[in-house]
Image 1: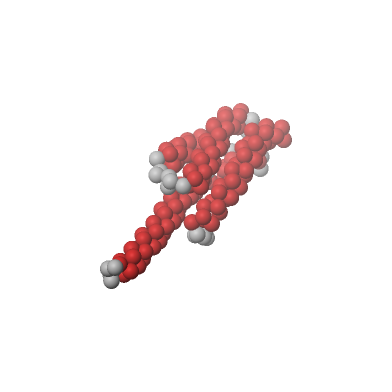
Image 2: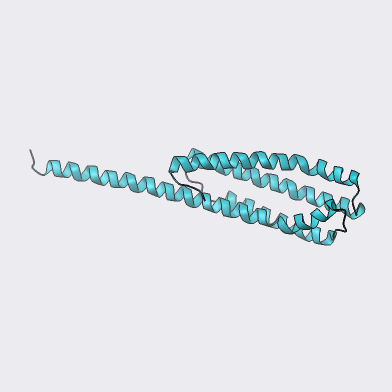
Length: 175
């Protein structure tokens, strides 16, 4: 028997262990980077809604609304949301079921946001005619937006659950 055989076997086991450890860490880093990219894109998309919502809130307060500003902001939302969808579609998804599931839910969230801006365009036309608002106008607006808010909240809950499962699977934490 070769005296170096035990040493070679031990070396192979150590190298295999290092290789597996590197692969696991590499996979975890890859998943964490993927998660961060998706979260950054969704956050930037959501931030694009801020100016529209601030002006739109005046309608609920029965104040005059700058509909031209709403139109401009709705167009910005559309541009950012469409770009976000394209960016998310072009992200390299790590080859794990949980990542594919997270990707699917992120795209569902983007589709919900697209649905919002389409309704915003429709509401802008309504506001041009019916401003300042009266109670029945606010009911009309609520009937248009409430189903989207409900769907958004369901999708956000699903995003959180899937993201937590991904964090558990790859042993990282979110701040």
